[in-house]
Length: 223
Ligand code: CTP
Ligand code: CA
Image (cartoon, rainbow, N blue to C red):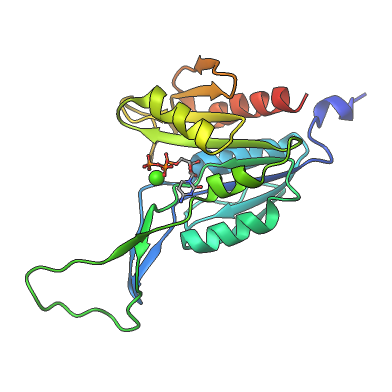
């Protein structure tokens, strides 16, 4: 017979996962976005659901199918993603922020399509609010908070700084230096840094397998 306790170790737990890019409107037909596919976040949401957790997936625009058993909230902008995450964070036992949130957004959105005129053109941008840091500042001791970091240089140092600054339990560092890893790939090579400073380098593997590794670390963190 099945031991449901063992099969569903996250039964009764709520998880909040963010995934995908954000789109920051410039005018009614244009936006600033990025190449995030959302695959890593969707894989984590699907894996947490398989372990029995109740999932809220806050997703930027992606071409992906919602994993089985996952409730998805669609958002476009960083501000909308912040609002949805802030609403669901207090009830979440586990939060994983894998979205590639825009760091800057147009200061003003034109209400008509911008016409081409001058040879040179620029758009004023302002910083978005850091969602993960906002949640980190509100985090209770019973909550597990996981972030991602994308770095091209001084990777470990930068990731450790984000881990501390955003008050995370661990951070998943994506290296852009590995071929076949990261944006638009089905595989990923990550290094996890725990809040106690422990560094764990994982092999290149499918995003599904990386999601399983991350879920194991979350289970460890909860116990
Ligand atoms: N993040 C967020 N809100 C933002 C920007 C980033 O929640 N406005 C989260 C991402 O989802 C990720 C983590 O912060 O989990 C790190 O994102 P990253 O872009 O690597 O770091 P930044 O803090 O934005 O710094 P920088 O881009 O300058 O390296
Ligand atoms: Ca950023």
